[in-house]
Each structure stands twice: as C-alpha cells, then as structure tokens.
Length: 185
Image (spheres, rainbow, N blue to C red):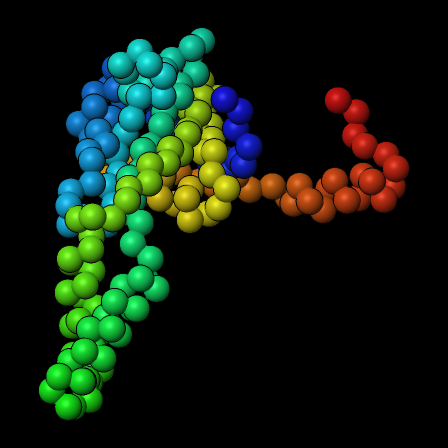
C-alpha cells in the first residue's frame, strides 16, 4: 500500500498520546454497518489483519477510517417522484405543488434507501509521534476534512495544523525546472 495524495498536518506540541491510549480510543468508535435508513456510517477499521486499530512499526502508526455510504442517485429518486406525481395528476385531475413533490421525493427516498447498494471506502493515515507529523492519504480536502473530523471526535478535540511552507511546492518545482537547477539533496 502506497500513499498517493498526501495531506500533511502538525501534531500539537507536547502531544503525548500512547499507543495503548490511541488503540483504546479508536476501539470505542469502530465502523458499524449502515442501518437500513442511514445514508452513511463512519468508524475505525483494522489497517491490517491483526485485529488492532493501530498498526505500529518502529514507533510509526498506521490508522484506517472506514466509511460505508448508500448509493441512491438523486436522478432515480427524482424520476420515481415525478412518475408518482404524474399518476396523482392523472387520477385526481390536479397539479402537484412544490411542497407535495418534495414530500413525494422524501417518501421515495425512505422506500428505496433500505434496498440501496452500499459502497465501502477506506482513508489511511500515518502518524509519526516522534517527529510530530500526521499524514492523511486523501485525494481531496473534503476527504481529509472528513478524516480529521472523525479523529477529532474520537480523540476529543486534538488540534492539528496543516503544513505551511514559505513557497508552494508547485512554484518551487517550476522554478527548478525553469532554472535547470534543483537544490542538492
């Protein structure tokens, strides 16, 4: 497993979480399957097959957030609601109003949600407690924010700061290529 899209954060100065404390905190919030009326469910999953929520190697920790999400496209809900509205209009010879159409959409969602497919995804995180780094493998800020939100709920308000550089990596690399000279190292 390789991290592809990194979001890098600084752990708070003096962060003294132990492996056992972190494991216990994550174990209190495992991923539960989506209920029949839930659109999504989030919780911690085992990063490896060992049955622990924190995979620790050489004082480096690997975590995994699991998310189950119901797949119920809005186009399907809208189409079914419009078909029902057309049926009401034909049977009762009246126009269906906005509020009634919204109620129809809600009813259709409630009926289709228990039968919707569920998709599961995992967001990975590497914590380097020795050097104070938390790295999330997330292709978007929204996915990283979702991970951090669940982590902050689990660890009750851990304050993380995103990595800030004086020059953006894109600008620095462009300058290197334009100048034909990269820094040593």
